[in-house]
Length: 537
Image 1 (tube, rainbow, N blue to C red):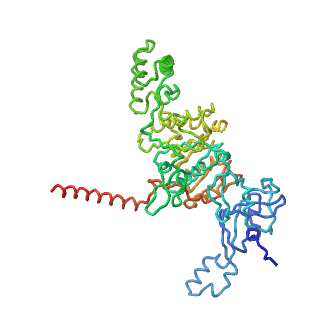
Image 2: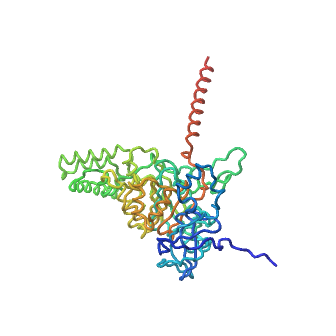
Image 3: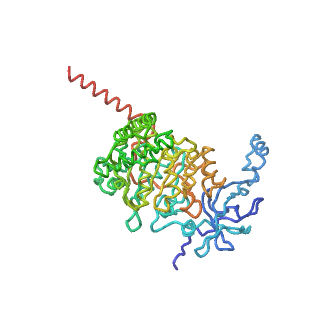
């Protein structure tokens, strides 16, 4: 007779117990009598309305022989081994505390509004239950990692993850760069019939430059690192990536709106704004009549010859235009053009790492974010997601208008973008400094380890589905572990982010390796100097 295969995930591991707090609709504890249970795991149990699914929020061991600390101390001081005198192991209990999430029955998911009965048997949630209950997209979803201890891949639906915007929040070193790289890889590898969107990254530190570089093959390696092939386990995305250095960017003055110009010029009064708008409109008419595109030099000349502008106002406007001119960012035409920046299944990395001036960074972000949004509303460009690293610098909370030039358009996309297929992804290590308006409009939050109490409180206020027990778990996450809450999933999910397939950025190195490389380069340079001097003797 064939051996019967038993699904271990269906085995009973514990029993619901009565406590002072429950069982209740919000808290269910159970005693574990077989196997091991971990914080962050999912369990299931029979329920009046199908199957109740709960998240393990904490695990505690108890033993009656160790409850009185004075007795334990006296035994240890006397030299008596308590383990030898009493059957301590027989009185050790493992208790798991859970938060009921909801019930699942015949494809329908409901809130749990009453508790299970004490004595109810508890099982580890099966993979099939989790996939359906949490709302994963098994066929077309983006594979970000897997639920630990369940062997269940986390595959999220593209629309649910991005359409109502995404925020990735974590302290430095928690793994947010790896997570964002994994997310981009999934977007670039999507099939055409599954729906592909354009991806634009505002990269302040050059962390995404590696996507644009062909994979280097070491000696003895195989393959040429072309296209999107794999070389020694690393996938080459260079053919799907466009890299733009900030120094190459030129913003066409004729394309600047008077609203953006007013944001760039602090202290511009309403009459001065009208005067400047009149000059710009005149130059645009002349351009259409064949005069060609114009720059800020033409704007200054137009201000000078406008008889309606008073002398003091002329001096002020010309001074402000000259200050913008000195940024070295503006010209007669755009470079690159907006249609070149965003294409289906393509990544565009705008590298801002060489720009020190925060105002200049914000101008670049504000201009291209506005152009992308406007062009998408007219359906001249494909649906896209705009990824903003260090988002708290680009859309800061409680900062004056002149110090937050790009904040307004980021908040606008966050509020209105979902209706047009314009998505934004905000990545920040200081959520407390990030615009509350923008963050609260992000329908999905992926949170890695955060320990700052001010950031945690800000996350609690802006993330739906986050309670104190979940916050306590966030502080103890290891590098690469994350919780996802919001639109992309039916219920909060703790998961381990998968390893990225793309090559490491040059910025991703240890302190020890950087120190070794520095000394090796210095020694090599000194050796070259000595060799040169010796050759001349």
